[in-house]
Length: 534
Image: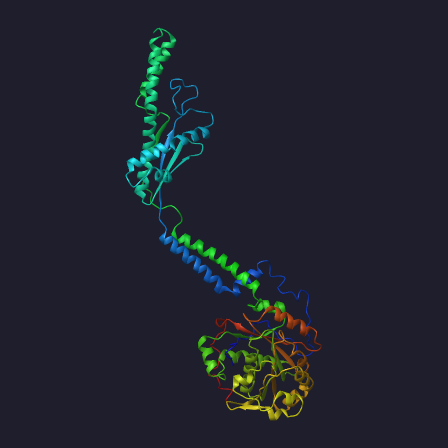
């Protein structure tokens, strides 16, 4: 029977979860038990626990980063690259015909020669000339920014790359620029070649025609006249640019995918920081059992929203999954050879579903034909009376002082005739608790004379020690944990306290928060109160 604050539900134990023997059991910490983490979980254990515990945070950050990346990819300006090539043919180092002219010469170091040629190609004069030809929308500085000149390794090729927002425009800029390079070189070389031609003619006129010097000067004059228009034989256009088919940069899909991965990493880091700053909560059953290695006697899955609303409006309307889980618990206790008639329920943390579990178990036992007494001994925060709509008629103080009989304090539920309840009100001070500790064995014995089972709800042992002195008065102790709520530090504190108690230890866990999809609904009996009201 779920309550509004902590909603349970039920799952049978997995194969291999065998409850410990009731006779002679006594839990003591084994090797490796007592640390706040499983020593075998590995270095990634804290990260994985944090991600599982705060997966909504991780998902929110990943989706946010991915959404921002998608928005940026949608609004970013698209650029295209067009590539043209220029060929460098350096003059031999011993070539004398063009001596004194600024042609590219072989230095014996090809990369250095190519870099020298790239410096000549990447010029402000070429950018200015290209801007004049491209139109008023282009300025020399914009052309310089759009153009990139790169020597191609050990080859004789220099690649000229132009970027623009349109593929045709990128190709136009690249082609216009390499043509401007040729034109600027021509304009630079023409007067220099003309001056060299004139100088060579003067020298030729002053030497006899039949000498070797005259022949050398004649050959040089012929070579110079072949480039009289200013053409540079060392730099030429090798390949013009074509409009590119695709834009540069990553595709939108890839951008969003990478952003999602980055978001997941950031979200995981945030989840880890939150887990370090907030009390560590147990999110997996294996982690619970590594801290306190007891068998899981039953599993209670989370209820759907519809089931939670129904439970809130009608507390006695126990969902079938919840009933099945506590029926599994009842069957295991009945199969034990020892006596299991008085059962105390406690937990590590508050809001773990301890009170809810006590009520549900009492309802299941009563529904199976057993006479049950449900006692609320959580004296700091008694909730059973509030949930079931019952007001105490005899105070716990009077019972503890043996000023009243238990039978006079028990109240019946009209819908569940076999269940009687001892509600209580909050008490102040430890005196009543000390009296109750001394008289509880007599109260439990008196209750067992009136009923088949006695279920006792107590305060969370991981937070306060109120339940500790009551343990010796009962046959069994059940521990309740709610995945995602139970704090690891509280489980450790409860474990250490119970390890120091002489006698029988707790028999196992009631785990709340299992995934409902793991539980088949095909075998549940219909109806919420078909057995309770019989």
